Image (cartoon, rainbow, N blue to C red; front, side, top):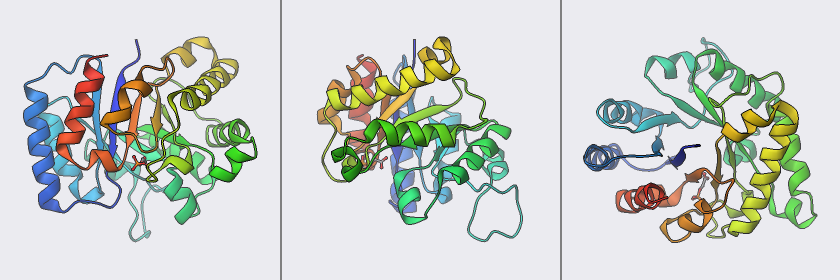
Length: 253
Ligand code: PGA
């Protein structure tokens, strides 16, 4: 049975104090709860990573980074390496979030290098894919997602230490969620594509998260879809009450 991930992507938000309070309250909740099949995961800014991994040490929380350099180390001011992340017990890392693609012009080829680097250091990549509004309206959603997968995963070892996140760009931070049916349609296409390319067993085990305006009010119906294995959540994961509410919804499934 695949786990259900409630993955918070904090992006460039929260102060140190707010992050500390969040982790403190989350640790209290997780210590008193049977996580069951649900994996709580937070991707904070780098500077709060240690607060997160301290919490992860005493609870079932996992910590992820939001980005990584494709380089090993050296003179790359402002960047962070897979080696550094791994030395801080960071377990997951987002790759190819649409904001990285859009604002930092990250190409599929670059993302492929980043995934390879993460795999070298045993950090689990969460590869984000998704179409823009104009691509969806032109009927190209499947084609775009398949081409992102194809290029980003070239020569990458595929197993259940790799996660995918379908995030339609038009649904991120806009309040517009893909309907559960729209999301399921793409998730199913992705799983079928993986099965054809890498085999049925890998496709059955591979977690595919949905992201784009996920919140407590729409999480249950998204998770009810057979190919949706959790949420990659921005805005609604910045608030501890709403994040815990989403954990509770997932734990009931
Ligand atoms: P959102 O962000 O939940 O605020 O739409 C999701 C994401 O960007 O991963």
